[in-house]
Length: 117
Image (cartoon, rainbow, N blue to C red; front, top):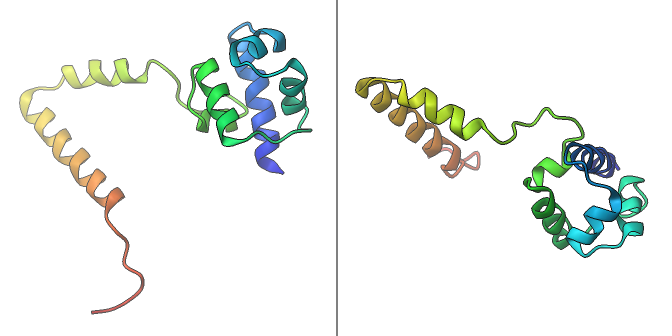
């Protein structure tokens, strides 16, 4: 399964980025070293609760556990966005706020089920 492959890669990468051994991650999560190894070798499938425990221990979202490389934006973007917004004048900030609200409304609006009225 592709998800297991992605999880295995992400788990190894995140552990390495944080300088954690399988034993250290096991200690932080309460999982066994054998289970961590089995996840990284794609021999086990974690439950949602286990994914939550792993994501918290590694300081990432559950989604980031399925990105085997560092393509997903990580920490620091919020501060960068904040700095950018602070550099805008009042009119530009207001326009940005309108755009964000409209994008949010579109993203959360119920979708039509193909019916015409």
